[in-house]
Length: 394
Image (tube, rainbow, N blue to C red; front, side, top):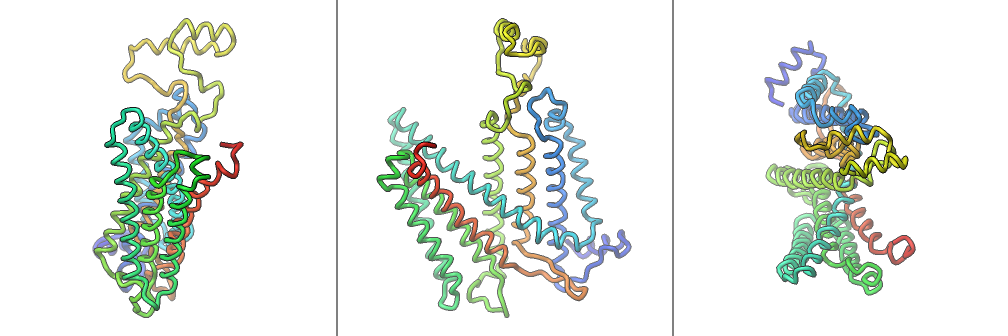
């Protein structure tokens, strides 16, 4: 936040939002937290409004799919409101709400990554088997070994710049991550695993490995520096590195958002319950009438079917069941806003002591990323072991 904006805000609020910040960094961080708070609040409210919407017959579906001007105005109103909430509220919000929420979003990214790793590799293998075109196999092999090579190179860079003899914790993070990655790579091609799950292999392990290594690198770069000792984090003050981290993190976030919403759309039957409001898609009127006569469908289905004559465009493809969970959709975006807040501020926290606000990094953010890295490996390992340990459930 610029000096002009800071003074203007203090003037408008009659000193209510005045904050002593020697280096000036805390104003920008609090501004980011305020804007992302408005986004999170908007999506949480929308999630509550959209709870248990089953089809477009529910009047609330029109709010989800329309009223864009009003929704933008509502979000803008929340942004303005956020700038008149005391600074101390956002100091606590960032530490106790945004940081855990960001960690939860990282876990969601992990689940989506594992799902994508299986789906993508299986899709390429199926295309290769169906068409016998070796370009699909070549692409998969290139992607697999490319990911492993990138992980090895990144691990070497981490050892070289962050793993000096004085940095025992960094050495542990890097070494333990490499041991885990090597373990799941070997596990993925073990004969007993291949027998229980023939579609598992090095391709999925490579995607998990590169993401886990990225999280470890991000965690180490987020470590706080004590007494200006930059040996364990030599790029602590590097603006270019911080920008790179933000860009990479934003890229992962936008990909996760796009994939999560599209995945939810394609798995709509899983996210919606099958009750009277979720009717089977039947376009033939005679079949609808037979179903009504047999009691399988309510009589209102005949009236609803009159709308399927093609006279309305675009056609309502959610009349019988929504394509994705509206409520879950907004929860994902609320958590994403929390993650973006942490990403832009580099997981820095604003704390107030003696009437003076200071900005400092937290080891809590480091452990969130490290735990997320371990979680992605352990969850992927479970997907390999589960068919072996619980064959009756797979």
